[in-house]
Each structure stands twice: as structure tokens, then as C-alpha cells.
Length: 421
Ligand code: GLV
Ligand code: MN
Ligand code: MN
Image (cartoon, rainbow, N blue to C red):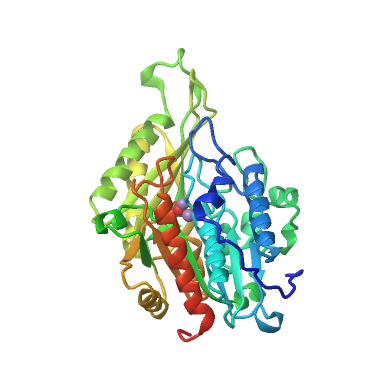
């Protein structure tokens, strides 16, 4: 990492989270799907990175894009030190047709919190950094939390560089197009050493805070989750010339697999299983598909149950596919076990925010990846709809400001003392 010089934050009128997000409200809107499609290293996400850099520059922070494409804005500690930093932030990319807040709320709240600290004249003895991780959603290349997984060494660069997006562009080419050298991807000891503690603020993806009538929560755990690809193969043929009795149609088999996934997950308490993406090949209205790819997302607090459920899905898929004259294969694309955040750090956050309830989340986060490597914690800001990964996701302005104020309180506490370590 280069280009970091000692600097300090000028005291300025704190920006509101709402005004920060308003500046990027039109970036990456998706007129076809609704909401936002801000995929990693596409023009929309690159525009958000430019916004990040401008907000950092406005606060005299030093911006660096590291070798894994992670954006950092640094306020060095005494003597220009970057070690044992208090780090906060989230991601800028989105799912296809996602909401406005999943990711950018954490980044905007970080800048707003920094302003609040400056207004309070809090410097502290530790460095501070705001971070934005790329491809958190896996919306472009299919690997969730790709940036943080590369940084921590949990993804092997050689296994992901050849991944293709929907247009056939490889991750390697996307990185090169964004001015990054794919050769340097991989575990980053220096970055990990610098993170003394990581706190990610995120929109709540559920109704916990609505039900408790509170604006902000402290995170306790992340549900174990993984992604699998099922490939169903049959016989491509003509929709008009092929008798119903003569078909080996993988779409018909895939439809039954989708129902089996739902039914199997319902039979296991606390399980969640979803097929959110299904791709027939070649994909023509008057063409019986020759192959269908389905992507399966399974989550459960007990990793053994997740594994057992996926095994049951495969068994059931074999049966329904055989009955349709088709074959099926399953490939695991990613897996992250249940994460429990550092209890000492969580208790410390609860001490700073005594009214904040402690909530678990069913969503994956970069904080969950970092938790195995550095003390990590999360804050959630109320979402009145409870809906996420959808344009219906929402945060009221007053709650966004409450979230930023809570984050500022937590950062202040961490900046002035290292006690939890
Ligand atoms: C990311 O938000 C996920 O939980 O998949
Ligand atoms: Mn997110
Ligand atoms: Mn998300």
C-alpha cells in the first residue's frame, strides 16, 4: 500500500447520511429490474468509488486502492502510523435490482460519523480508516465477499481470476479494465495487520428493529450460508416438432428441483433455501432447453444441517431428473460457516449503546469474513419495510442519522482506548 501521508480531519459541518446518499441516488439505477444494479468494476460501481474518493478528499483522508481492489480512506495515527487502526465501512456493489442502502449506507454512515467525531474534536490515539470492499454480493462473478475473502486468503486468486460475468468478461479482465493488476491478488498480511478492529454498519435485512421499536442494533452472529450450482442436462429440441412423450426437458426437471428445495427447507426448522437464479441454455421460447443451471443458496445456524440439506436436495434432484430422462450435477461455489462476533467487542459496543438490542442476521457480510482474522462487530440500522435485496429496502432519514451517531459513539470509544484487545 502506498501514498499514505499523515493528515488530520478539518472540523467541518457534519454531512448527513441522507445528503451523502442523495449524491449517488441516480448512480446505477436499473430501469429494467427496478432498483439498482451496481456490479463490481462496472461503470456504476466505479462511479461510486469516485464518489468515495471525493468524500475522502473533502475530509483530507488519504485514499488507496489496495491489491485486492479494496478502497481505503485513511486518517493516520500519531507519527503517521497505520497500525492497529479502527476501521469501518462496507461495500458499494449491489445485487441485481437491489436497494439503495445495502452497502452504501455503511459507507455513507462512516463518512458522517467521521464528521461527527471531527465536530466533537475527537482525534484519539489510533489511526482510522473507512473501507469499501468490492463484489460483496457476488452479483457479477458469483463469489460473495470476494474482496474480503481475497484479503484474508480465504479465496485462492487462481480459482477466481477466470470467473466470467454474464457478458463473458473474466474477473482478470475486469480488474485490468479498472486499472488493477490481477497478479497481485491474494492474502494481504499488511492490510490485516493494520486492522485493529473492524465495525461494519449495515441496513437491517429484517424486521427485528421495527418489532423492538429501536433505530439501531448491535450484531451478534451471521447465519452460516453457501452457494451451489446445479446443472441439469437433457436434450435440446424443437418446441413444435417434439412430441410430449419424446422429451427430455431439463426445464421441467429444474422446476421440480425448485419445489423440492422449498419443501426440504421447510421440513428443517431455521433453514432457508432459495433458488433465485435459473438459466436455461440456449434460452429460446420455441426451444426445449438442452441444459439448465440453477443456483442454490442455503443457510442454517448449524453447518451440519446445511450440509445435510444440500445432500437431500441433490438426492431429490437425482430422482426427479432421472424421471424426466435428465441428469444432474452439483458444484459447491462457496461456503461460510456460522459466525459469532467477538463477544468482548460486542459487549463493549453494547456498553456504548445501552439501548441497542443485540440481533443476529441471516445475511452475509464482509465483517463476517474478517471476524475469523480480526476483532469485528456490526451495527444495524432500522429498515421499516424489513425487505432487502429489493427496491423496497428503506431507511428513514432520522434512523440513518441515529445510525451514524451510534457509529460515531462506537468509533470514539475505540479510538481513545484499545481496552478490548
Ligand atoms: C448478502 O447480502 C447475502 O447475504 O447474500
Ligand atoms: Mn450488504
Ligand atoms: Mn446484500
